Length: 76
Image 1: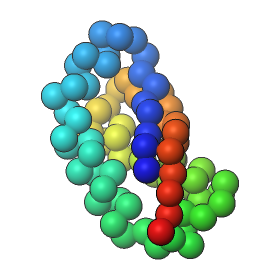
Image 2: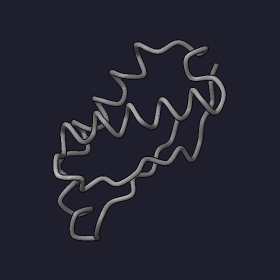
Image 3: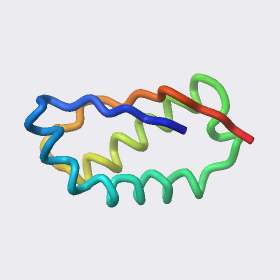
């Protein structure tokens, strides 16, 4: 899985760099509890993006992260 985050500005992106390990951990924790069937199809990806955005906004409050895009996705 590869995700891209849309942020409000380049300045905000710079501020997020120190939080990347915590953000990665939250995403991996979320994915560890999902099954392949839960992630399958466009609905599954939509739920994934919504859940990841919600988790990241808990870590980084204030709507600095605007959207999550899935740019690579493989289920084994």
